[in-house]
Amino acid sequence: MSTSSRSRPWIFLGKRLAYGLLAILAIAVINFFLLKMAPGDAAEAMAGEAGTATPEYIAELRAQFGLDQPVLVQLGHFLARLATFDLGYSFRYGEDNVTLIFDRLPATLMLMSASLLVAVIGGIIFGVTAARYANRAPDQAISLVALLLYATPPYWIGLILILVFSVWLGWTPTSGMVDVLAFNTGWAHVVDVAHHMILPALTQAFFYLAIYIRLVRAGMLDVLSLDFVRVARAKGISESRIMYRHALRNAVLPLLTVVGTNLGGFLGGAVLTETVFSWPGVGRLMFDAMFARDLNLLLSILVLSSAFVVLTNLVVDLLYVVINPTVELK
Image (cartoon, rainbow, N blue to C red):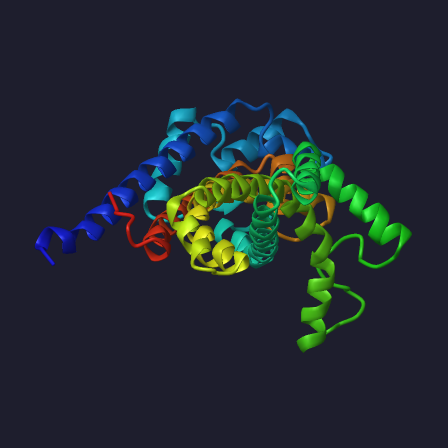
């Protein structure tokens, strides 16, 4: 192996990390100005909650929080903290933003992982089935359901699931992450959390499930028309083996790309899903911070979310090489 071939992965990683840092910086600056353009601030929100919203009290809070300084000065302080990995302090909750976010992060990652798993596995299974029976009844039924799921707002799906499975049938809880009155521990606690997670995970997964079904179906139909598939069939290899062992390996690469770009959407969709189901994650924390006008906390969540998406997309690019060794890093 030549020296240039050995150094190529490190050059690729260096470029991607540099581009990622620039993207995170741009996201932080743009969101800072967007949030500053919104009416109101943390001082007004806290003064209103205290019931003493006099101009003097609001001015005192603004001075205490540094909100009375010029916008560019506030931006400079924010970027300086960001450069030292200091995400600041939440005036609303009275805690460090890092502590608040990482306390809620496991719940969001758990929900996101479950919904992503449902969407990807379901997308592959139904997408392959639709391609195998292209233009026949199974394909038409799967395509119709995918279209309905894609066209339906996720929050409406969540409300319907609550109505059917929680209110009418009584199979699942309506909200929350655990039964606070049960005091479950060990395996019982795991089962309790999984029971509460069924509806929010399905709600968040259905929209992306529809996308992945169509994507896998289209990719499989392209691959099934290639010569190596005809050769495999001529050798008498079973159709299931051709589908899942030969064709899917090549058809799944576009799915990986879309999944990587959709991770930001999963985090964004968590705001609505966690609010509808009272799931105590980062999405619900972001929703509460918006109403409290806690801009420090909002910006911290946005910066960490963008960093997570950048790193995940880098991992997805590296997975290309693992799945298909013919792909080169550039």
